Image (cartoon, rainbow, N blue to C red; front, side, top):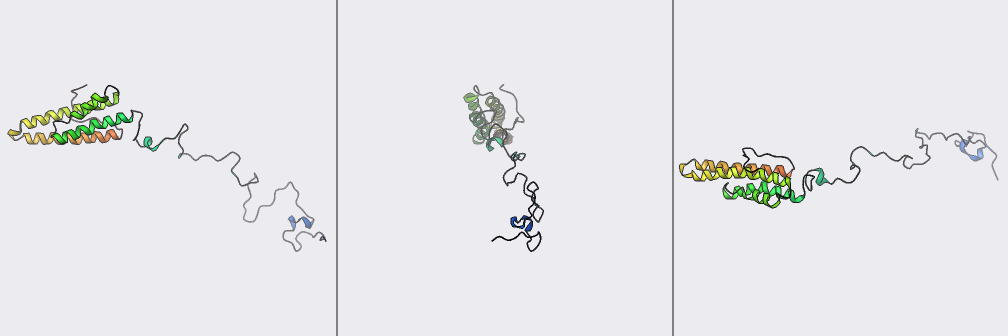
Length: 194
């Protein structure tokens, strides 16, 4: 048994879309929006837009590959030299400070000289940094030696202590700057070796 068609709005709130009501909307017109005002997307689905999603600015590495944090923040292999070069540069600066600390400022030149002889011919970057450290440490080793020679006068203690502190402090500062890939020129230095 089938029901006879009912007129729209008579006892059935959904009569406009009821196939048995006899009144159907034309197929070319879009369905009315649901209550609340949200209309479904025109594509008919809820997937991504047909053109794809736009990438948000920033947050993605540049085309061509991944940029690891070691290169973003300045540690690890750098364009200026290899890891071995960085190691020898740190040996030259921190080794000069350690040699000055252990010897009382007269042997701070040994570590920069070792770095210069070991890697200076292979890397111009290591050579430049080792020469800077070597010139500084030679000067303050000479000042420290003069302080030891004048110890009997009484002023030698102050000269030796000043040379010891200066060669350690500035050697450590240069080593920290070198570990951060920042340029550093020693103050109170003379070009003895070029």
